[in-house]
Length: 230
Length: 203
Image (cartoon, rainbow over all chains, first blue to last red; front, side, top):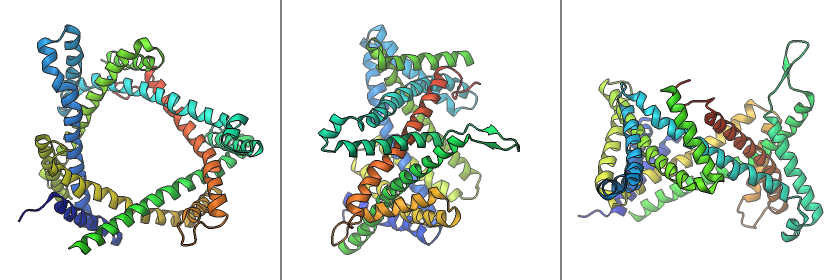
């Protein structure tokens, strides 16, 4: 008797879904076992993907040609990450773990630069531009929106943006009674910010809840289908 | 060593950041990013090796819950060995993906629906302030407005209020939060590039 991969996937999926959903009756050993196996399989799968899709094509495959026939620059370009990888692997040994700082410093520096560029080019400038565009009469006309409606919506968004940002201003001054309190104007603006943040989190909550409910329905449907096909 | 690591972090960061604004630096930036991808891969592998080491140690000491740790180590090592030999595209690895990883992720996501409902009820019972009330009312409006009912959308709420709340009012708050997060990221990144923060070791 030959078991097809689809059949094995179906049986495993059925079993693990039951084990995970058993958490609904309370924390139990079966749920824990399923979660630990999941973490193990997912980590092993991730390690295999990293090996075959990052390490082999970017480091190991070009290594031999670069060393045998490459120019000096090509040799350096491939040997530097190899050296860095060696430093990182020293983290495994407690005595040599300090050497990994060199590679970690490089990664943190590159990461910081990518974060700065991402925050600036990917978030700050586009978000500010999008807020300004709500007050552009030509953009409103292109979207078939009246000028008054565009201005009203733009004002709500601008007020929401500014008050939400100011909600996180926590600078406070000492009062006569010794307590620390924010400036009264900031308090009023922060109150408006709380309302806007409450609305935003409510919409996000509804979206996440709808996605979670969809996943639950899909899992229950897969259980019913599996039993029906037996 | 402290000064050396700081110099490496700042130099790498400045060159990569410069590559976004000065085209002459783009080839060097691409090279450094390629190195960073390789080294991040190795860092992840070391992290997974550490996971094996920690749980193997728990099993060796026969600590509480060591049976679960044994399951984790067996599952991890087996998947890793088969993955290294057969490659992730092999049908055996696809069984692990479609039979364990995806169903467990979806089932955990499904459990989240119960947890979220419970958390929302607890929020109303424990903290009844303006933000909680606005939060719950908004969530209810969005649910009612998005519900697929036999007769179509709920009048006014589904056609008028829900789009207005989610596309205008929520956008204002979301934009404020996004800009705040971006400013925080910018500050954190600049502190690293100026050498004020050294999370790679050294004060």
